[in-house]
Image 1 (cartoon, rainbow, N blue to C red):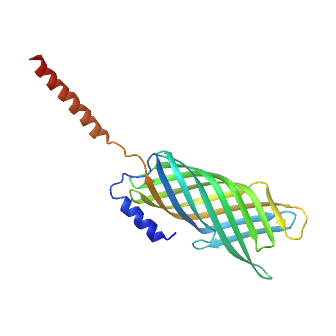
Image 2 (image 1 turned 180 degrees about the vertical axis):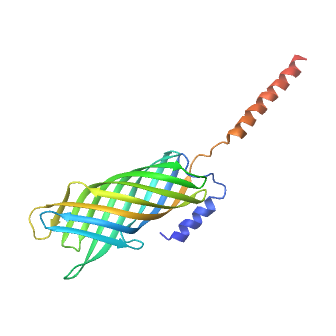
Length: 227
């Protein structure tokens, strides 16, 4: 999905919008890792490795779609894909992973255009090690970040995320049985966000004036009736 098209559509939709996020809005996010540190361990296979990745997409890229059940409360799902080339003493190996998770994010207002966020996520991950082995595991993660709203419905975000697998299994081709697998990842991420829909909020002063106008009209009408 080309980013220029997504941003152009968001800017056109934002001309008469109130500031996001709002209740009943749909949040679409494109996110990528810019710096990541992964610790990978397979006990029975004697594999213990730490890898640092730098650059856009180095640790993976993903898309998330969320729904605001309240203005500061969002629930949603995220799909992430990543691929890296690992250099060892013998050959280069290509490794990839696919993760699907459900998340909750809470927004904290810092300023008119700034929101801090706290996120929790749970899901399932599948990894492929150059076609020679596969791993699968549930995972949990937490994250914190900041959104800067360039327009009422679009924001740029950055943050730090940490995830860890739970009770993972590693299966190597030609080897009977599974090995215990664990992975922990810490990543600095950046994203582009679009907020769609949502109920318009009534301005308190405007609503008060409207109610006051109705009361005044009723008193005037009553005075005429008395005469």
